[in-house]
Length: 226
Image 1 (cartoon, one colour):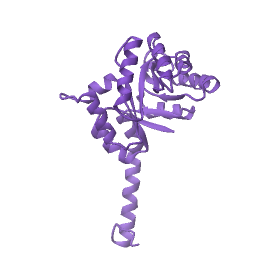
Image 2 (cartoon, rainbow, N blue to C red; image 1 turned 90 degrees about the horizontal axis):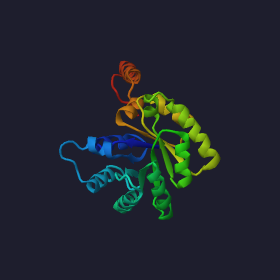
Image 3 (tube, helix red, strand yellow; image 1 turned 120 degrees about the vertical axis):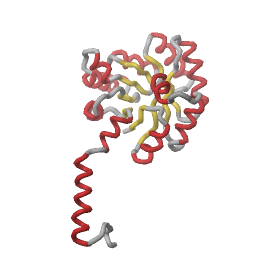
């Protein structure tokens, strides 16, 4: 199971990478634009900083900005040269499918992103994408069923492209993420606020406080006296 942090906030990556079993970081142009504040770093410097906030095994997902296939391929080649263990995100449009096919032949790993339907995701997988990113909450926001779409996509990939991983994306609640994992998704990317909800619970804090209180009442201090 690969868990990624969906952010370009370097301080958040540093803080959470120390705590959590993160496989790396995912970004897109909107995340990069929102996460850099008034003095944005050049993309190459940002990627270097994100890598430095983790270890050399961590994976980065970075999205192209171009809309036509040839420019997507050119941007992907440039991104691929920036750092090791980088996966290029390609929107699954008609032009994106062309780019994914050609990048596969160039041994540049890709993720098919902005996936709103199971059939769309399967086409990206068959074209050569290594990961597929279905947009769970965005499908819900359009009146669809994001979790059902992920279930359909997972079934299609299991039958026809078992080497391709779903990297489930676009969440507003921890429950959405859990349901994707229960469906068998092998990777998932979570925004900072959602992943923090998995590890922050007032009931847990209260239990830890009670443990300390009971121990101190019995032994007069807060150490185990080992």
